[in-house]
Structures are given as C-alpha cells and as structure tokens.
Image 1 (cartoon, rainbow, N blue to C red):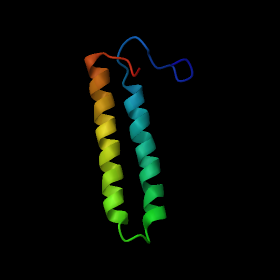
Image 2: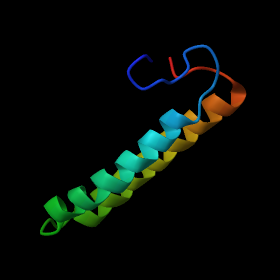
Image 3: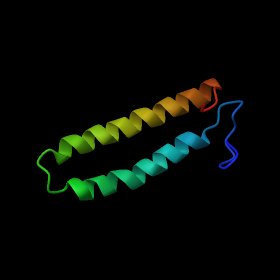
Length: 69
C-alpha cells in the first residue's frame, strides 16, 4: 500500500503490528463506554478475542508470504 509502505507482493508483518496497536487503543475506549452496561464484560471478552484472532490471522498470512490483499 503506497500510503503506509506495506508490501503488496510478499508477506509483511507491519499490518499485524498495526492491528494490535489499534486493539490497545480501542479496547480501553470500549471498556469506558461499556462500564455501566450489565453485559459489558461479555462484549469486552468478545471484542478482545476478535482482535486477537484477527492479529493472529494477519501474522500467519504474512509468515506464509501472502500480502495483506
């Protein structure tokens, strides 16, 4: 991708780093929004698991050698 400098021909670990950094920003904000909600803990676990799965998938894709898209 020209804007970020990520490779579109081979695997690149930088997108997975970006996903994990956004998780570290989004999850605390989501916790602040949901702190008064009764089902907030369940939603937080789902969001954290989703970010973890997405990060692992992007890492595996890069390690196999496929570009992000």
